[in-house]
Image (cartoon, rainbow, N blue to C red):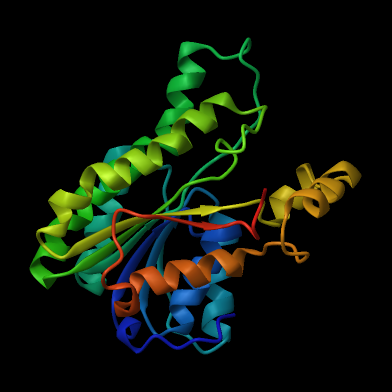
Length: 254
């Protein structure tokens, strides 16, 4: 839950990829709490439906959502178009979808490599391509790409994920000038080690606890809503002069 109210987000249409669980669900909830008209896609039907039901039960507008495998660019672009037809042109896009499955250098095949890029890299570009015409009609917009601090800290065990996530900053900076001419801002938000249910279940062990204590400047664990707070700021008019930047939310990881 966010404590700050961004009046500029009320009634604005927002699209989030991978919005059904984890960080994405926190972002969807945060926008809903601001009174935005939220659309999201996710491959997980049960989690997505549960999120939508929770938001309605809490008194928020029901989000538009669809089960979508973002590896299918046609399906992703159709979802954007259909959601926009119902909610209006999108003022903000959050490219959140990702999969940090572990793998070794030796195990990667060309097919696996392409699959990792199809999830972690390619959808962001084509989602941007899909929403930009509407943002031009609005006369403004904000694109927020979710990056990662893992590759910057030389994290091991996911070289394909590291490649894909390192490209996010290139996508952000490479489009900033072009989009900026139409007052469309584009930024990267790079989370540290966020305690999603997936992370806690799969990888947070005693050594992980020691690593957090050793490397974070702040003692508290990062939660999904901490990332959502930065996303809200960049989507709102409060971030009106922020573009081509990377904003790290990592509790000061050293």
